[in-house]
Image (cartoon, rainbow, N blue to C red; front, side, top):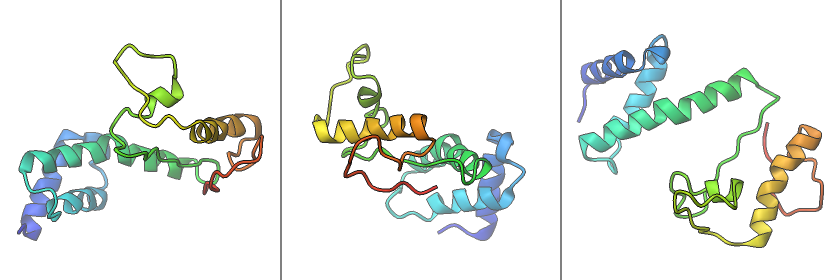
Length: 140
């Protein structure tokens, strides 16, 4: 089990690697604690990878959402197995350079997925549908 001092030590290490978020020690402590105390992430290299992922991908997303509060929408592509890059084929259906294969070939899903972007472009709101849809309401 990690102690408070080791949490602080790990947070300082993360801060030195990612100086851009080093000003918020509370944020760093929260990120590091989330992974240090996870029982499902037991190998140190996996914990380090998880912290790095949170710092590079997750935190900037939330910072952008906060900066554009009330004007932005957050979506998540989570079709199992939801691996990194699985959504690329949906954005770019003819792009095959990296051997990307359609993992979830469902016409209704593809139409709903792309309609969210088109609705946002046309109406600045993905909830104002261009066509009737079973897509859920996206929160601001």
